[in-house]
Length: 62
Image 1 (cartoon, rainbow, N blue to C red):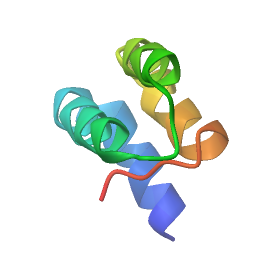
Image 2 (cartoon, one colour):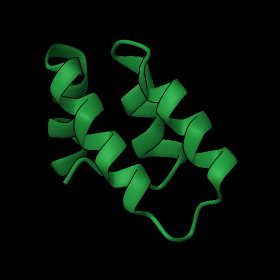
Image 3 (tube, helix red, strand yellow):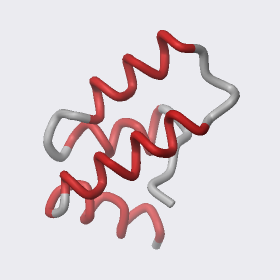
Image 4 (tube, rainbow, N blue to C red):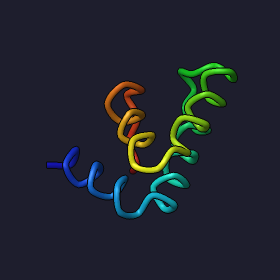
């Protein structure tokens, strides 16, 4: 259920979700600097970026 809510948020409220992703990415200790920068760039793309981060990057919005 949480995944469905995150996908809907990523599609309709992208600017808010992008900020939440960036906060989550910056706070992660298991990622290196280059991968953090790449994920921030990827999550910038409307709709699909945050969804990819949640599914492939083992991330979360909250």
